[in-house]
Length: 249
Image 1 (tube, rainbow, N blue to C red):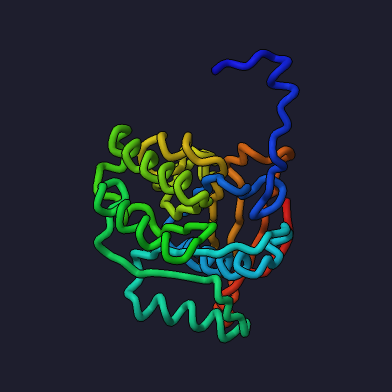
Image 2: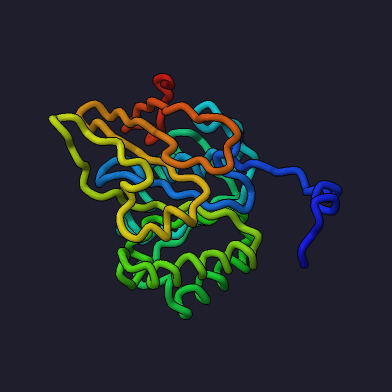
């Protein structure tokens, strides 16, 4: 029912808890990590997962320990294992609260797919679900608003049922240039329907300089942050499979 202003102001909401501080990734929120091909999206997701499992620093921001579940549908299972194994060995990190599954025929916009995911989540009590990438767990037309609505509705059900936070890896469309300069399209760079960008609380964009393994992490949307979030300049270490902070702007 409706509340009066007096009733609303008298209500004491629970304290907000952040998985990644400064409102980047609060508990119960939805984050989309986007970038073009070969912009280190999967490696940044793996790096983030290990950091979240242990409550480690995330490129200058604090985190709180989480149980992380990654649904990966792009790399062959052997290659996925190789990357995760290399990361774990190089950092000597083997958290018991890191879970992953490689599945190539699961569609989360369909009842069977979302039911399968729910059954998997019941077994591990994850607090963060990472999906990498969106286009391989989605059977509809990514530009169709009705199709995308089915997907985000199912994601909301998972979020509410398991009290889980969701991180989705997605692609950006081809870049646009004007007089030789690349245009900053913000959230409009996301491939497909605007439903996804409207649904997400946070959208992170990765812009990679592949020649030097440098990447700029920017916050195209930070709807739950109280202050402006500066871009972060990162360098990808191909031996350790992690990212070092070069600076902010």
